[in-house]
Image (tube, rainbow, N blue to C red; front, top):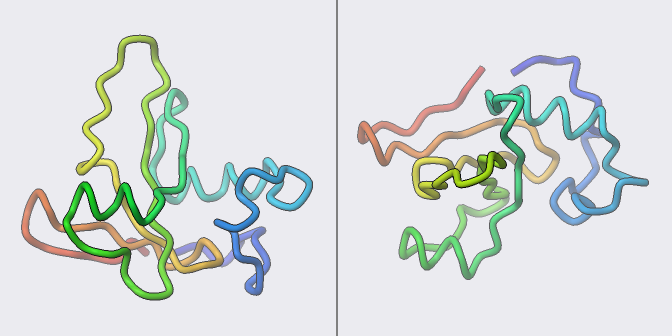
Length: 107
């Protein structure tokens, strides 16, 4: 993962995700870039209840679950394939291995 991260190491990015006076556009753009989002994709944090409904398990400890959301009109969002995780401060991107059985960290 790139060390040019504009998110302070002590910021709980999920807690302030919707507060644009704390999580700036630069921070959100960095996280979207690290996640490999296309220009038409946005990110949303996944609440524990939705995560349990999708995977029948809690979000891993000290992690935030995120979902890539295709914002194009009529797009079908296949949520399980679009979920990834970071640490509380947005670093340490981790991708579930639901498609290939392998979990991996993206550098």
